[in-house]
Image (cartoon, rainbow, N blue to C red; front, side, top):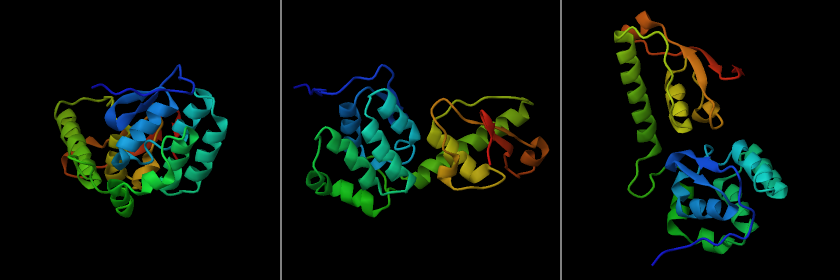
Amino acid sequence: MSGYILCQTKRAKLPYFIENISTNVYSIEELSYYLYHNLYLIDQTIMNEGLCSWIQEELELPALAAKLRSKISKFASAEDIVYPVFKEINYLTYEELKDREEYQAWLDSGGTIAFPEGEEQKEFRSRCVRGMLCQVDRLCKENVESVAFVVHGGTIMAVLEQLAEDQKDFYHWQVENGRGYRMLVDEEEWKSGVHRFYEIQKLGGAIE
C-alpha cells in the first residue's frame, strides 16, 4: 500500500533543499512530514534564516516565517522551533509530539544522540575532518595549488571547527545553500604535521 501527502497550502516553485538527506521539499506539508520522521536530524543546518526566507517568499507564509525568526534568534529549543511548523497546518498537536519516546530522548540529549541506525554527531564530525586531512595531504603531495570542494554545510562546519586558525564553535561556520569559504594552507607547515586553514573568507566577503 502506498502513502500520500495531501497538500492544502501553496506549492513552492523553488524547493528548500535539506542537506543531510539530500532532499528537496516543496510545501509546508512535506516539511512537516520530514521533521516528524527525522526528529534526530533537526539542528541549525535546517532551522535557519534560509528556511525562514523560503517559507516567507516561496510559500507566502510571512507570519510563520516571522515567528520562526523570532525563536531562532533567541536560540529557542528545537521543540519551540519545530512546533509552529506543525501547528500551521494542524499536522501534529503538541501532545502527540511530546508523547513520542524517540523525540523526548532526542530532546534530553540536546540533539546529540544518533538517529536510528545512524552515527552520533561526534563521529560524523570526526569523519569529516579525517576526510579533509586525507584530501589535503594528497593535494600537497601532487603540488596542486588551487582546488574547490563541493560538500554539505555540515561538513564545512565540522572541518572548520577543528582546522580553522581562529577556532570557533561548530555553528559559527554555518553558511546558506550554495555558499562556502575560501582559505589558504601553508604547504610546508601542513607537511610538518601542523594542520590549519588560514585567511578564511566567506564567499562574498571576509568573516568577522
